Amino acid sequence: MRSCVIFCASAVIAPPVHGNIYEFSSLPKATLNRESERARKARPVRHAPAVPLVGIIRNPRSHRNKGVAAEMADCSNILTETPKSREDLFLTLAGFARRGIDYLVIDGGDGTVRDVLTCGAQVFGDTWPRLIVLPKGKTNALTVDLGLPGKWTLTEAIAAAHKGNTVTRHPLRITSADAAAQGLASVQGFILGTGAFTLCTEAGQEAHRRGAFNSAAVGLSILWGVLQSLFGRAGNIWRSGTPTRLLDRLTGRLLPRTGPGEPDERFLAIATTFERFPLGARPFGSKVAPGLKMIVLDWPNRLVLALIPLIMFGLSGRFLEKRGLHRFATSDVEMDIEGSFILDGEAFPAGRYIMDEGPKLTFVVP
Image 1 (cartoon, rainbow, N blue to C red):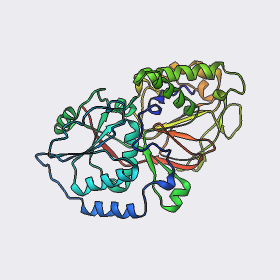
Image 2 (cartoon, rainbow, N blue to C red):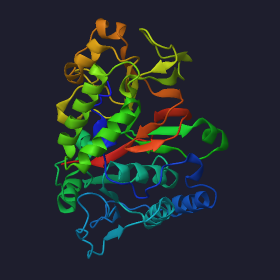
Image 3 (cartoon, rainbow, N blue to C red):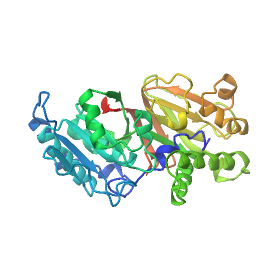
Image 4 (cartoon, rainbow, N blue to C red):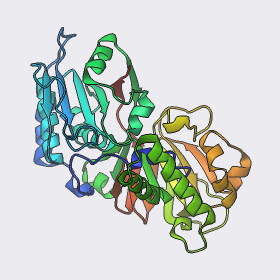
Protein backbone atom coordinates (compact mmCIF):
# COMPACT_ATOMS: atom_id res chain seq x y z
CA MET A 1 0.00 0.00 0.00
CA ARG A 2 2.83 2.20 -0.78
CA SER A 3 0.03 2.97 -2.85
CA CYS A 4 -3.08 3.40 -0.77
CA VAL A 5 -1.03 6.46 -0.44
CA ILE A 6 -3.40 8.84 -2.02
CA PHE A 7 -1.68 10.96 0.57
CA CYS A 8 1.47 10.94 -1.55
CA ALA A 9 0.01 14.25 -2.55
CA SER A 10 1.67 15.92 0.36
CA ALA A 11 4.85 13.97 0.02
CA VAL A 12 5.76 15.65 -3.25
CA ILE A 13 5.70 19.31 -2.40
CA ALA A 14 7.70 22.44 -2.95
CA PRO A 15 10.89 23.11 -0.96
CA PRO A 16 10.48 24.24 2.65
CA VAL A 17 11.63 27.65 3.80
CA HIS A 18 14.94 26.09 4.80
CA GLY A 19 16.14 23.04 2.91
CA ASN A 20 17.83 20.89 5.58
CA ILE A 21 16.22 17.86 7.19
CA TYR A 22 14.61 18.62 10.50
CA GLU A 23 16.34 17.71 13.75
CA PHE A 24 14.15 18.33 16.79
CA SER A 25 17.10 19.60 18.79
CA SER A 26 17.54 22.44 16.29
CA LEU A 27 14.02 23.83 16.51
CA PRO A 28 13.65 27.39 17.89
CA LYS A 29 14.05 27.48 21.67
CA ALA A 30 16.02 29.19 24.48
CA THR A 31 16.47 32.89 23.56
CA LEU A 32 13.84 32.54 20.86
CA ASN A 33 11.36 31.33 23.46
CA ARG A 34 11.89 34.60 25.33
CA GLU A 35 11.22 36.43 22.07
CA SER A 36 7.94 34.54 21.62
CA GLU A 37 6.89 35.40 25.17
CA ARG A 38 7.53 39.09 24.49
CA ALA A 39 5.52 38.83 21.27
CA ARG A 40 2.54 37.29 23.05
CA LYS A 41 2.56 39.91 25.79
CA ALA A 42 2.90 42.77 23.33
CA ARG A 43 0.26 41.51 20.91
CA PRO A 44 -2.37 44.25 20.55
CA VAL A 45 -6.10 43.61 20.37
CA ARG A 46 -7.64 44.87 17.13
CA HIS A 47 -11.42 45.11 17.06
CA ALA A 48 -12.84 44.61 13.55
CA PRO A 49 -10.50 47.05 11.79
CA ALA A 50 -11.82 48.66 8.61
CA VAL A 51 -8.54 47.82 6.87
CA PRO A 52 -7.11 44.49 8.09
CA LEU A 53 -3.40 44.11 8.70
CA VAL A 54 -2.07 41.20 6.67
CA GLY A 55 1.25 39.45 7.28
CA ILE A 56 2.59 37.29 4.43
CA ILE A 57 5.21 34.56 4.64
CA ARG A 58 6.30 34.09 1.03
CA ASN A 59 8.50 31.25 -0.16
CA PRO A 60 10.13 32.53 -3.38
CA ARG A 61 11.36 28.99 -4.15
CA SER A 62 7.88 27.51 -4.32
CA HIS A 63 6.95 26.20 -7.76
CA ARG A 64 4.60 29.00 -8.85
CA ASN A 65 6.47 31.81 -7.08
CA LYS A 66 9.70 31.50 -9.02
CA GLY A 67 10.30 34.62 -11.08
CA VAL A 68 6.94 36.12 -10.06
CA ALA A 69 6.54 39.34 -8.06
CA ALA A 70 4.68 39.28 -4.75
CA GLU A 71 1.03 40.32 -4.86
CA MET A 72 -0.06 43.68 -3.39
CA ALA A 73 3.43 44.33 -2.00
CA ASP A 74 2.97 48.10 -2.32
CA CYS A 75 -0.10 48.19 -0.01
CA SER A 76 0.58 49.76 3.40
CA ASN A 77 -1.49 47.13 5.25
CA ILE A 78 0.33 44.21 3.56
CA LEU A 79 3.54 43.05 5.29
CA THR A 80 5.41 40.69 2.95
CA GLU A 81 8.44 38.79 4.28
CA THR A 82 10.65 36.08 2.75
CA PRO A 83 12.61 34.55 5.66
CA LYS A 84 15.64 32.52 4.61
CA SER A 85 15.87 30.19 7.60
CA ARG A 86 13.60 28.75 10.26
CA GLU A 87 15.12 31.05 12.85
CA ASP A 88 14.35 34.04 10.60
CA LEU A 89 10.86 32.67 10.12
CA PHE A 90 10.33 32.45 13.88
CA LEU A 91 11.49 36.03 14.41
CA THR A 92 9.33 37.26 11.52
CA LEU A 93 6.24 35.61 13.01
CA ALA A 94 7.04 37.09 16.41
CA GLY A 95 7.20 40.51 14.73
CA PHE A 96 3.82 39.89 13.09
CA ALA A 97 2.37 39.00 16.50
CA ARG A 98 3.67 42.24 18.02
CA ARG A 99 2.07 44.18 15.16
CA GLY A 100 -1.24 42.41 15.78
CA ILE A 101 -1.87 41.06 12.27
CA ASP A 102 -5.44 40.08 11.46
CA TYR A 103 -4.55 37.53 8.78
CA LEU A 104 -1.46 35.38 8.30
CA VAL A 105 -0.91 34.45 4.65
CA ILE A 106 1.21 31.42 3.73
CA ASP A 107 2.36 31.92 0.16
CA GLY A 108 3.94 28.61 -0.83
CA GLY A 109 3.47 24.84 -0.77
CA ASP A 110 2.68 22.34 1.96
CA GLY A 111 6.27 22.42 3.20
CA THR A 112 6.00 26.15 3.79
CA VAL A 113 2.74 25.59 5.67
CA ARG A 114 4.46 23.02 7.88
CA ASP A 115 7.34 25.40 8.65
CA VAL A 116 5.01 28.29 9.49
CA LEU A 117 2.84 26.16 11.79
CA THR A 118 5.92 24.72 13.49
CA CYS A 119 7.72 28.03 14.07
CA GLY A 120 4.49 29.88 14.84
CA ALA A 121 3.39 27.46 17.55
CA GLN A 122 5.60 29.14 20.17
CA VAL A 123 4.53 32.60 19.01
CA PHE A 124 0.76 32.23 18.76
CA GLY A 125 0.13 29.28 21.08
CA ASP A 126 -3.55 28.36 20.81
CA THR A 127 -4.62 31.81 19.55
CA TRP A 128 -3.68 32.19 15.90
CA PRO A 129 -4.77 34.89 13.46
CA ARG A 130 -6.92 33.64 10.63
CA LEU A 131 -4.88 31.83 8.01
CA ILE A 132 -4.88 32.27 4.24
CA VAL A 133 -3.08 29.69 2.10
CA LEU A 134 -2.04 30.59 -1.45
CA PRO A 135 -1.36 27.30 -3.31
CA LYS A 136 2.03 27.85 -4.88
CA GLY A 137 3.63 24.42 -4.34
CA LYS A 138 3.81 21.46 -6.69
CA THR A 139 1.00 19.44 -5.10
CA ASN A 140 -0.74 21.55 -2.41
CA ALA A 141 -2.60 18.75 -0.63
CA LEU A 142 -3.86 21.13 2.06
CA THR A 143 -5.61 23.29 -0.49
CA VAL A 144 -7.47 20.22 -1.74
CA ASP A 145 -8.73 19.61 1.79
CA LEU A 146 -9.74 23.27 2.14
CA GLY A 147 -11.42 23.35 -1.27
CA LEU A 148 -9.27 26.16 -2.65
CA PRO A 149 -8.96 26.80 -6.39
CA GLY A 150 -5.59 26.00 -7.92
CA LYS A 151 -4.81 29.63 -8.75
CA TRP A 152 -6.34 31.43 -5.81
CA THR A 153 -5.00 34.97 -5.59
CA LEU A 154 -4.42 37.17 -2.57
CA THR A 155 -7.09 39.59 -3.80
CA GLU A 156 -9.65 36.77 -4.00
CA ALA A 157 -8.63 35.45 -0.60
CA ILE A 158 -9.01 38.82 1.13
CA ALA A 159 -12.43 39.26 -0.50
CA ALA A 160 -13.45 35.85 0.89
CA ALA A 161 -12.10 36.84 4.30
CA HIS A 162 -14.31 39.96 4.30
CA LYS A 163 -17.30 37.65 3.72
CA GLY A 164 -16.33 35.52 6.71
CA ASN A 165 -15.85 32.31 4.72
CA THR A 166 -13.81 30.00 6.95
CA VAL A 167 -13.29 26.38 8.01
CA THR A 168 -11.35 24.98 10.96
CA ARG A 169 -8.71 22.25 11.13
CA HIS A 170 -6.30 20.86 13.70
CA PRO A 171 -2.82 20.03 12.39
CA LEU A 172 -0.89 16.95 13.43
CA ARG A 173 1.59 17.72 16.20
CA ILE A 174 4.66 15.48 16.32
CA THR A 175 6.93 15.63 19.37
CA SER A 176 10.08 13.63 19.92
CA ALA A 177 9.70 11.78 23.22
CA ASP A 178 13.17 13.03 24.17
CA ALA A 179 12.27 16.57 23.10
CA ALA A 180 9.09 16.41 25.15
CA ALA A 181 11.09 15.43 28.24
CA GLN A 182 13.37 18.43 27.67
CA GLY A 183 10.52 20.84 26.96
CA LEU A 184 11.61 21.37 23.36
CA ALA A 185 9.41 22.28 20.43
CA SER A 186 7.21 20.05 18.26
CA VAL A 187 6.69 20.05 14.52
CA GLN A 188 3.25 20.51 13.01
CA GLY A 189 1.86 19.46 9.65
CA PHE A 190 -1.00 17.58 8.08
CA ILE A 191 0.14 14.22 6.65
CA LEU A 192 2.55 11.77 8.24
CA GLY A 193 3.66 8.58 6.53
CA THR A 194 5.96 5.69 7.41
CA GLY A 195 7.32 2.60 5.71
CA ALA A 196 6.20 2.33 2.10
CA PHE A 197 5.09 5.94 2.18
CA THR A 198 8.70 7.07 2.16
CA LEU A 199 9.34 5.22 -1.11
CA CYS A 200 6.16 6.68 -2.57
CA THR A 201 7.53 10.10 -1.67
CA GLU A 202 10.64 9.41 -3.71
CA ALA A 203 8.49 8.24 -6.63
CA GLY A 204 6.47 11.45 -6.44
CA GLN A 205 9.60 13.56 -6.51
CA GLU A 206 10.76 11.66 -9.60
CA ALA A 207 7.38 12.41 -11.20
CA HIS A 208 8.02 16.10 -10.50
CA ARG A 209 11.41 15.91 -12.15
CA ARG A 210 9.67 14.49 -15.22
CA GLY A 211 7.20 17.36 -15.27
CA ALA A 212 4.12 15.93 -13.52
CA PHE A 213 2.48 17.97 -10.76
CA ASN A 214 -0.62 17.95 -8.57
CA SER A 215 -3.04 15.04 -9.24
CA ALA A 216 -0.93 13.75 -12.12
CA ALA A 217 2.08 13.35 -9.83
CA VAL A 218 -0.08 11.66 -7.19
CA GLY A 219 -1.53 9.23 -9.75
CA LEU A 220 1.87 8.29 -11.15
CA SER A 221 3.29 7.76 -7.66
CA ILE A 222 0.40 5.52 -6.65
CA LEU A 223 0.58 3.48 -9.87
CA TRP A 224 4.32 2.92 -9.47
CA GLY A 225 3.90 1.92 -5.82
CA VAL A 226 1.08 -0.53 -6.60
CA LEU A 227 3.04 -2.24 -9.36
CA GLN A 228 6.21 -2.58 -7.28
CA SER A 229 4.37 -3.82 -4.19
CA LEU A 230 2.03 -6.14 -6.06
CA PHE A 231 4.50 -7.85 -8.40
CA GLY A 232 7.77 -7.47 -6.50
CA ARG A 233 9.52 -10.61 -5.30
CA ALA A 234 10.56 -11.44 -1.75
CA GLY A 235 13.40 -9.15 -0.73
CA ASN A 236 12.14 -6.27 -2.88
CA ILE A 237 12.37 -3.09 -0.82
CA TRP A 238 8.80 -2.26 -1.86
CA ARG A 239 7.58 -5.39 -0.02
CA SER A 240 9.51 -4.95 3.21
CA GLY A 241 8.15 -3.86 6.58
CA THR A 242 9.49 -1.33 9.08
CA PRO A 243 9.75 -2.07 12.81
CA THR A 244 6.97 0.15 14.16
CA ARG A 245 5.20 0.20 17.53
CA LEU A 246 1.93 2.16 17.69
CA LEU A 247 0.45 2.77 21.13
CA ASP A 248 -2.87 4.51 21.84
CA ARG A 249 -1.91 6.74 24.76
CA LEU A 250 -5.54 7.17 25.82
CA THR A 251 -6.10 3.43 26.40
CA GLY A 252 -2.50 2.34 26.96
CA ARG A 253 -2.95 -0.41 24.36
CA LEU A 254 -1.07 -1.18 21.18
CA LEU A 255 -3.07 -0.61 18.01
CA PRO A 256 -4.23 -3.99 16.63
CA ARG A 257 -2.15 -5.95 14.13
CA THR A 258 -3.29 -8.96 12.08
CA GLY A 259 -1.81 -11.38 9.57
CA PRO A 260 1.64 -12.91 9.05
CA GLY A 261 5.02 -11.24 9.30
CA GLU A 262 6.93 -9.89 12.26
CA PRO A 263 4.62 -8.75 15.09
CA ASP A 264 6.50 -5.48 15.52
CA GLU A 265 6.55 -4.51 11.83
CA ARG A 266 4.14 -2.42 9.75
CA PHE A 267 4.29 -2.13 5.98
CA LEU A 268 2.68 1.32 5.90
CA ALA A 269 1.14 3.80 8.32
CA ILE A 270 -0.43 7.14 7.40
CA ALA A 271 -1.90 9.72 9.76
CA THR A 272 -3.73 12.93 8.88
CA THR A 273 -6.38 15.38 10.02
CA PHE A 274 -7.61 16.05 6.48
CA GLU A 275 -11.30 15.62 5.69
CA ARG A 276 -11.04 15.81 1.89
CA PHE A 277 -8.43 14.19 -0.32
CA PRO A 278 -6.94 14.50 -3.83
CA LEU A 279 -8.83 12.94 -6.73
CA GLY A 280 -11.97 12.77 -4.56
CA ALA A 281 -10.59 9.74 -2.67
CA ARG A 282 -12.18 8.42 0.54
CA PRO A 283 -9.40 6.29 2.09
CA PHE A 284 -11.05 6.47 5.53
CA GLY A 285 -14.46 5.40 4.30
CA SER A 286 -17.54 7.19 3.02
CA LYS A 287 -17.93 9.26 6.21
CA VAL A 288 -14.74 10.99 7.32
CA ALA A 289 -14.66 12.14 10.93
CA PRO A 290 -12.76 15.31 11.83
CA GLY A 291 -9.53 15.05 13.78
CA LEU A 292 -6.60 12.63 13.78
CA LYS A 293 -7.05 9.35 11.94
CA MET A 294 -4.75 6.62 10.68
CA ILE A 295 -4.72 3.96 8.00
CA VAL A 296 -2.27 1.10 8.54
CA LEU A 297 -1.27 -1.89 6.43
CA ASP A 298 0.56 -4.52 8.47
CA TRP A 299 2.03 -6.52 5.59
CA PRO A 300 1.95 -6.36 1.76
CA ASN A 301 -1.00 -8.69 1.16
CA ARG A 302 -1.40 -9.02 -2.61
CA LEU A 303 -5.22 -9.03 -2.53
CA VAL A 304 -5.27 -5.81 -0.51
CA LEU A 305 -2.73 -4.23 -2.86
CA ALA A 306 -4.82 -5.24 -5.88
CA LEU A 307 -7.85 -3.58 -4.28
CA ILE A 308 -6.04 -0.31 -3.59
CA PRO A 309 -8.09 1.69 -6.16
CA LEU A 310 -11.31 0.59 -4.45
CA ILE A 311 -9.92 1.06 -0.93
CA MET A 312 -8.92 4.60 -1.78
CA PHE A 313 -12.52 5.31 -2.71
CA GLY A 314 -14.10 3.83 0.41
CA LEU A 315 -14.02 0.02 0.20
CA SER A 316 -14.05 -1.50 3.68
CA GLY A 317 -14.88 -4.81 5.36
CA ARG A 318 -13.70 -7.40 7.85
CA PHE A 319 -11.92 -9.32 5.11
CA LEU A 320 -9.54 -6.37 4.73
CA GLU A 321 -8.88 -6.20 8.47
CA LYS A 322 -8.05 -9.91 8.54
CA ARG A 323 -5.47 -9.23 5.85
CA GLY A 324 -3.85 -6.45 7.80
CA LEU A 325 -5.60 -3.24 6.70
CA HIS A 326 -6.83 -1.08 9.59
CA ARG A 327 -8.44 2.34 9.92
CA PHE A 328 -8.16 4.06 13.29
CA ALA A 329 -9.77 7.20 14.70
CA THR A 330 -7.67 8.40 17.61
CA SER A 331 -6.22 11.57 19.08
CA ASP A 332 -3.02 10.63 20.91
CA VAL A 333 -0.54 8.01 19.67
CA GLU A 334 2.98 7.06 20.66
CA MET A 335 5.01 5.91 17.67
CA ASP A 336 8.31 4.06 18.11
CA ILE A 337 9.82 3.53 14.65
CA GLU A 338 13.18 2.21 13.44
CA GLY A 339 12.97 3.89 10.06
CA SER A 340 12.49 7.46 8.93
CA PHE A 341 9.07 8.97 8.43
CA ILE A 342 7.71 11.77 6.24
CA LEU A 343 5.77 14.80 7.44
CA ASP A 344 4.45 16.99 4.63
CA GLY A 345 7.26 16.02 2.31
CA GLU A 346 10.23 16.18 4.68
CA ALA A 347 12.09 13.25 6.26
CA PHE A 348 12.52 12.86 10.01
CA PRO A 349 14.81 10.34 11.71
CA ALA A 350 13.90 7.08 13.45
CA GLY A 351 12.95 7.39 17.10
CA ARG A 352 10.09 7.50 19.59
CA TYR A 353 7.47 10.19 19.01
CA ILE A 354 4.18 11.44 20.40
CA MET A 355 1.55 12.31 17.81
CA ASP A 356 -1.56 14.28 18.73
CA GLU A 357 -3.71 17.15 17.47
CA GLY A 358 -2.34 20.69 17.41
CA PRO A 359 -4.31 23.91 18.05
CA LYS A 360 -7.55 24.73 16.32
CA LEU A 361 -6.78 26.83 13.24
CA THR A 362 -9.19 28.92 11.17
CA PHE A 363 -8.57 29.01 7.41
CA VAL A 364 -10.16 31.41 4.94
CA VAL A 365 -11.88 29.57 2.06
CA PRO A 366 -13.84 30.70 -1.04
